[in-house]
Length: 126
Image (cartoon, rainbow, N blue to C red; front, top):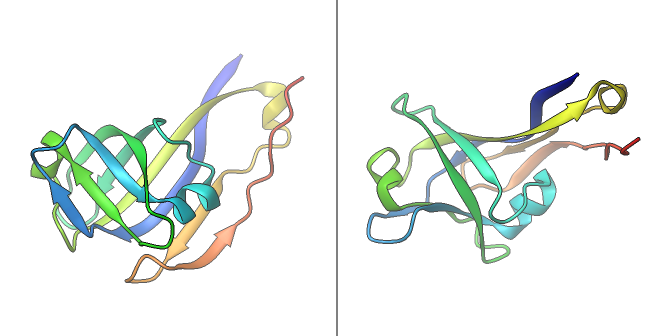
């Protein structure tokens, strides 16, 4: 059996910009991508704490250290600058992989600086 589980979460990041006339995606500071283990072009779900919107898009890399969270394309109608988001990525794990499973949880302050990080433990394939 395989189960879809939370792989990574960026908790309470703030949108720094939104660009309606840009191809759809969410630009995320490379420091946050690296800390969470989310890969560029990976599918992500976004939960807007500010307005309740929920949507799916993909991650793209923003400049390291910029603290950027930019919601782009049609999703710009669902999140704007200042909104608080939870960004989640999910992966599929086998029962064997789940024995060592731990998601990566990254917490930030109001300026998207990492303040806490539950380290992810890489899952080894059987």
